[in-house]
Image (cartoon, rainbow, N blue to C red):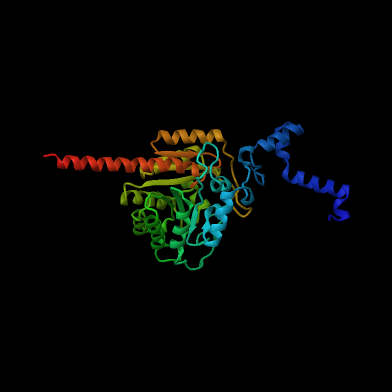
Amino acid sequence: MISNRLSSPSTLIRCYSSTRIKEGPGLEDFLAAGGNASDAVKRHEDKLKLEKGDKRLRLPPWLKKEQVFASENDNVKRLKKQLGKLKLSTVCQEARCPNLGECWGGGGEGVRDESIATATIMLMGDTCTRGCRFCSVKTSRAPPPLDPLEPEKTAEAIASWGVGYVVLTSVDRDDLPDGGAAHLARCVHQLKEKKPELLVECLLPDFAGNLENVQLLARSGLDVYAHNVETVEGLTKWVRDPRAKYRQSLAVLKHAKSSNPRLLTKTSIMLGLGETDEEIRQTLRDLREHEVDVVTFGQYMQPTKRHLLVREWVTPEKFDAWGEEARGMGFAYVAAGPLVRSSYKAGEFFLKHELEKRKKAEKISQSSMYIVEMVP
């Protein structure tokens, strides 16, 4: 029950007014609008770039999205229960992904197969040794030890889902001699052993630039080797942990491809951190020079007040323009949109098709070689 003091009209008015003043337009909005109050409010609500004196930007309408709760969807409920039982973490939950309900719930706009649901499993625990300024995953210099049964539990869970494509990701584990590479490779082996036809994408750390560990994963049986550059080179030191370097990430992606040319290599870029258009173009050129096949663009969204502020809300139209430009540069696949994330399911349908097409082409090529050899 609300107390009399809190429920009095004068108190409610004061609370409402202070909230409106705190969250509403500032002096600069009124000055820019020529003193017109309604124009000032509209300017404040439509503002897409952070200006001097602004505390934070209001969420634009295209980023307001309905949430799917466990009680409202059987797939979400089932996955949460199973993951909890097996003590497996997901990046969907840890990184507060806005697409959790859509991916876990299956289906969605343009998707007819209601059985397709995706949860991106986060391996090696839920605590990272790095502290990137955009990421809400827990951090520690000494995370708990690895679960030796995790590869088996992960394979058991995913095999029971009945999906044809899965995304595995992991925290950084700089506390381990190999960064956890052997553990991750074992997870892939177990999955392929249980379900050989399963297509596996791994979103992997940089292993502190250790290319032997990169090669181990590239040859572990996975189908898509993903590692995110996250942002443009000029912002890397402000956005990512100091141990995560732009050129190091490019070298990782290049070495993965050279270690296994049949792999699709993939990366993701966040927009809205203050990057310029030319910086984005240069990043795309760098990625193509390092033979990266797939790129995704998404809007950076501040997970908590402790993290970096959003500098700009990038419009859906601008995302579309970047998607077109990237396709014109020769990327095999591009996903670009405010709510696109590196493991967003929209890309998985294409990648599944692309991988199956490549495997079919390989079989035809091998059959042709056999026929040629048999002809006298």
